[in-house]
Length: 195
Image (cartoon, rainbow, N blue to C red; front, side, top):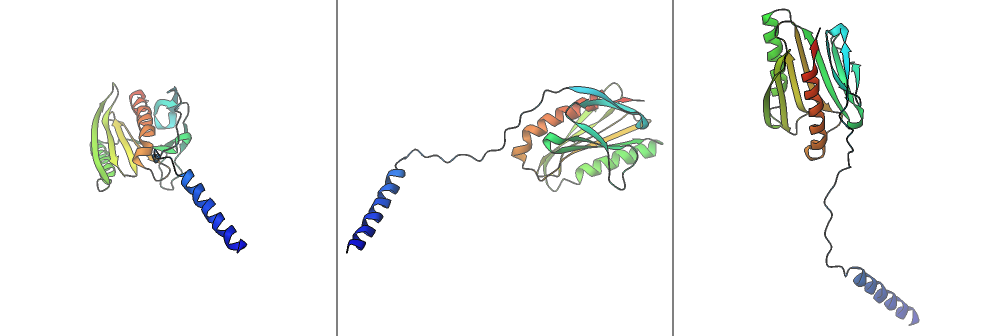
């Protein structure tokens, strides 16, 4: 009998604790959040690829490495943004003739529009600098790449770039990083000097 009384008393005590603990009627679930990202100040140094006949402004928080892809050509390099988990793939080629230029322009456009099935929108922004012209592509949606570009002087030099994150991305979580890196890409484009 004493055992039954202790069991009932324990159950009543636990019920009281649960009722008292759940008295806050103002509970609001917290929204899902992402890690805070502290962006460095945009700062650049001139980076030269003499064997590839061009130079550009490189962010001090990025590093350049040769592309290790087995089919990579001599002047294919990667700009690695280690702190942001992103890589800007740069492909440089010399233009042989007008037909070669049109093939490169077509290939660049095809590489962007391969993503049309996953992209919500592809925006083409025309670029003009004192030494080159080109197009900066912004791809919205769940695409593998979110920004690509090409620039050329139309006679000798052609440079193509595509930005990829090193893991599957969520558009909401990468939006601030993407905006930050697009500014670096535009700086690179505007600072290119052909040699």
